[in-house]
Length: 400
Image (tube, rainbow, N blue to C red):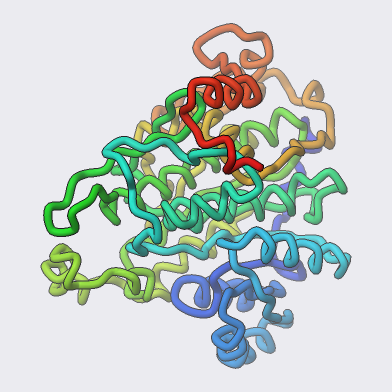
């Protein structure tokens, strides 16, 4: 147990490698700049290689001043092949990651596929193209949550061994919008409720509602990641950090003719802080040695350069476990944590994990014993699929 906590003694990003997704502009670019100024070496993991090349030029002086290196790599978190290729390249470099910043995201991107019903369960089928279908139906959830979820798993938890340092951390760029999000499940599938638009003549999911749902997923995954890492005896941690309201191109997909909300808020957006200001909290989450030094009693959510107050739903660990299982199924992930140090080595006083909303702690081993309010039974996916096929709830030809 002492070894786990002492892993954070003298923590620094200086001399380590950090990966920042979506780093070609906005918050991501400024986070990369801040890390370089702290002496880290940074990989800009970007979808657009041309924009990444321009970002490299902008960050050259910061890298030189900090003594680190800056590189660019192609990564599109909405494409599983791109994620696999990035991780493969990273492993071949034989570098060990110190910090992963899951920053890439979207807001307001309209789905390519129309919602057929007022109430929908996703995905309609689990198969090789489940994620691709999710991207079509819910871009925000796919790009803001599922893609980063896969990337984090492959770097930290792959069967071939983690490609990260023993005390590496994950920083998920969060938002206070998570407080307005809903993550609900029925029969092991995610449920979303749409509203009818007379103008569009169809059901549709409000863009802000979809964004808020994806950010609540970020919060839940941060908490579950920490719980599972601690139970596995690993010294890794995750933090959710909100940059606040900033002037960036995150809202580039929102058409003002479709959304009167954005137009009404235009006078207020002029008061938004700069990306540089917003990035400070994220950089602190990457660099702050004290943030993970308390083991499972650490805070999980940072906002405005201080500990944030997460919504109650962000501390729903049972729902977080459901989301974790569902996300693994959608992304085709068939591996789980490998333990480093035995969890039995943790001192008794630390065998509990903090609820970020209430500040209360619970005993993680209760889930293994199947007792208490924290008990959770994983979904039997094979039985579920067989039952739904039998009842005609899904088109079985889509699975072939």
